[in-house]
Amino acid sequence: MKISNPAQTYINQTYANKTSQPANTQTPAKLEKASDEAVSDTLKISPTTRDLQKISAAMETEPTDRTKRVADLKQQVQTNQYTIKAEQVAEKMIGSLMDEMG
Image (cartoon, rainbow, N blue to C red; front, side):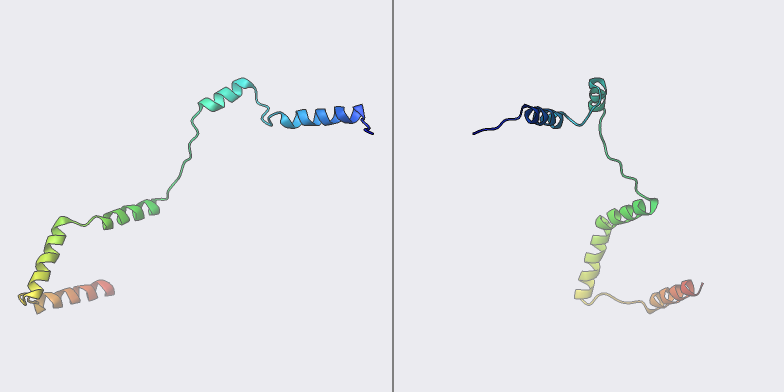
């Protein structure tokens, strides 16, 4: 035996119709306008972060003359032709100490 209640069927159909409708109640003109506009994200970077990015990029690229100089020094050290000038070392040490003291 099947019991059917026409009022219950009506309520169920009404509820089903409301949930199947889109939640966006904008007019078609507004929806068309919104879809035409380009959606984009923006990112604001602080000046410090920009400077750090520039420094990082500069560190990744190695100057060509530096690689040649390092290769020359490496060859001089391996062949015992590299000489250290004590006066230049002393001047650099004194200069760095003066910079630290102010």
